[in-house]
Amino acid sequence: MQRVLLLCAIGAGLYYVVAANVRIPLQIGAQTKVSDPLLALSERFEAVAAKVTPAVVSVEAVKPPKPAANGKSSKPVEESGSGVIVKLDGQNGFFVLTNNHVIAQARTEQITIHLADGRVFRPGQVWTDPETDVAILRLDGALNLPHAALGNSDTAKVGRWVLAIGSPFGLNQTVTHGIISARDRGQVSLGNAIRIKEFLQTDAAINPGSSGGPLVDLQGEVIGINTAIASHNGSNSGVSFSIPINLVKRVAQQLLNQGAVKRGYLGMQLTGSFDPAEAIRLGLDRVQGALVEKVYPNTPAAAAGLQPGDVILQVESISVRSENHLINTISGLPAGQRIRLQVWRQRGTTSLEAVVGDWSKAQAQFQLNP
Image (cartoon, rainbow, N blue to C red; front, side, top):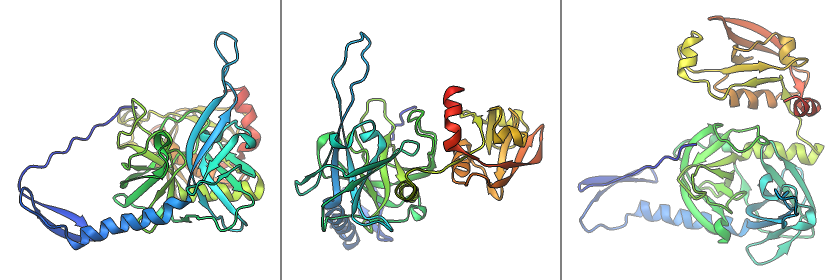
């Protein structure tokens, strides 16, 4: 992944700052006075930080030793991250939302949750979903805890102000600000375990230790869980990614009610490098859809007649934007549902019918036959 540096310079002249939907002229180089809209924006940042930071926690986990190359046992791995205390619909008590990679492989008694007021808890129970990198920790025996409200990430548009709160480098209750830079980012390499990618991208500074902390809007509502950064050296480069809170809520509901997340699948490998040259070669006038690279035998994709080289353009009435969009769309469908696929094949469109399979039952097949 390339690191992008944005260099900005401001020369002398008349410029404008947008705050509270008001354009305010500022004379560069002349004595200026802080305007009321700017002061109001600053005070809004302060109010949101004061509202949410008490609900932000640091999470520490002790994980089993990694196998050493020389055959000797290594030391246990200590992982630290962040989290946020919330209440979940239909559930009693308080829960901490964080990333699976922060606590993965650690036993419950090896996870420590540090609250902003100094209290320390062990989680009463832990639920994880590696495919979205979501983890939920239940806090037992805690009353009247500070907690953050969950917002609606579907309404978080590009350009919206956001705050990221967490414990970068162990510095608890750190608050940074930025905007939503992009939506539906899936071109992020986070290892083979994470399949469901529809990240919010932000330029709010996020660093190691911030994983699992909340991304909040100026209403003080959580719209994302911070999970990754794009960087060559591991530090903030202005390109960070958060799991949309609506996805987290859907995962949490299934984990707590069913014990696992049910997902659909078709059974094919999609290319992650569908570029303009390939689109033109196939006769398409733009890069769209998901290009099939391989179809696995004895799967719903094979039964539907999908072939390598097909480009899936549409699922029912949903236009497919990319391979990740297709994966996310199919994953959200129940097993057994019949769907109509519009496919680009041999410079023309064709329609296929597929029956969505149960991913939980098929995973073993793909682990044995990658």
